[in-house]
Image (tube, rainbow, N blue to C red; front, top):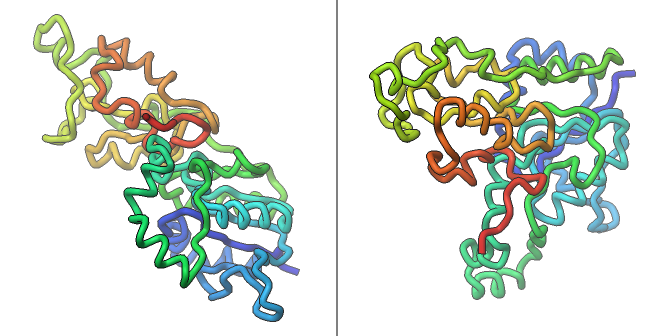
Length: 300
C-alpha cells in the first residue's frame, strides 16, 4: 500500500506548490509512490465535514503531512495541529513554514495597527454578519514554534530537487539532512577580501548601496558595496540569485532553524569596515524571510 499524504496550505502564496509542479516529468515518478488523501489545492474540501455540519477541522489519517505557509490566524493554527495529530511525519515545506517567511514581516507592526490598516471597523462589523473571519494570532509564527516538525525544507520557494530529495528520503526510511554550508561558499563571484573602495585607495568603504544600479561584474557584490546575506544564509539553492547578479536576500534562512542571521552577518560587515548603521532598514533587512522565532517584534 502506498503511503498516504496530506498537503495543507496555511498563510502562503502557493509558490511552494508551484515549485513541486516544477519537477516536471519527475513528479509523475513521485506520485506513483504516494497516495494524496487530502489537499485543498486539488480538492474543494474546506476542512469541514459535510455530513453532520461540524465546524471542527477534519484531516484524514495519513503517513506524511506536508505543510506550507506560516501561522497567521487561528484557523492556520488549528489546521497545523490537526495535521500533527493525524500524521506520523510532518514536513515544513518552504521558508514560511520553517521560519515565518515574508508574512512574518508583519510582526514589526502592533496587531491593532495592522488590523486598522487592513479592514476599517465598519467593514468588519458589516461583514461579520455574513461570515466569521478567523481571528488573528498575536504574531506570525513558524510551525516548530507551536508543534513538533520532523523535516524542514527551506527556500522561497524550495527547489524542486530539494523537495523530491526530502520526500524520497522519507519514503525510503532514510534521514534527510539539510546542507550546513553558506550561500557565500556556493557563489561563483570572485572574492578579493577587500572592498572596491579599498581598490580605489579610499580609507573607508562606501556606504552600502541599494540595488540600483545592479552589480554586473564577477566581483563579490558585498565587496562592491551591495548588501548581501550570502555569508549568513544556508546553502542548497545553488546561489541562483547571485548567478544573475542579484544579492542574496536570505530566503534559505540561517544554517540552524531558529537562529537570528544578524549575528552571523556581523562578522562580514565588520571585516569590510561596515557597521549596522550602514545597512538600510537593517531591522527588516536581516530578517526578510526569518521574522518568526521572535526575530521581529512590534515597533511602538
